[in-house]
Length: 106
Image (tube, rainbow, N blue to C red; front, side, top):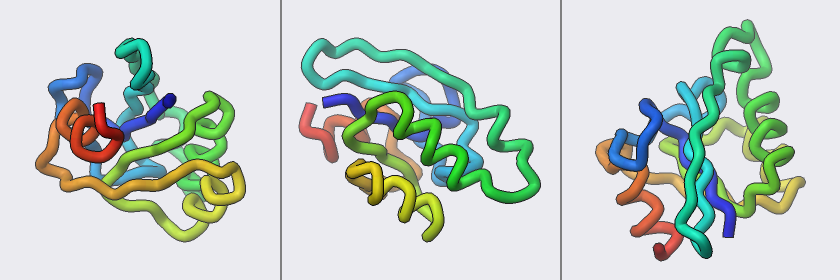
């Protein structure tokens, strides 16, 4: 399964970002292969409005099946739900790795 986790850094050891739409970036993790890659979210952070929906579309375009973050706004949630992507909220004190292990079961 391909999982996206909002993150404050670029590694699995960094803390999750409690924001979804204005997250610093995302780690995309494949639970089958164990591979991961980071992608920044700078373009969407700078938006005056619509950051959540644009970030949700960015996630959907990457073929993600589950996204883990601290909080999802209603508009972003609607886009993700329409795309069939599971949304899971995580404790902001967790690392990306911990969130994946606890929620995605890897």
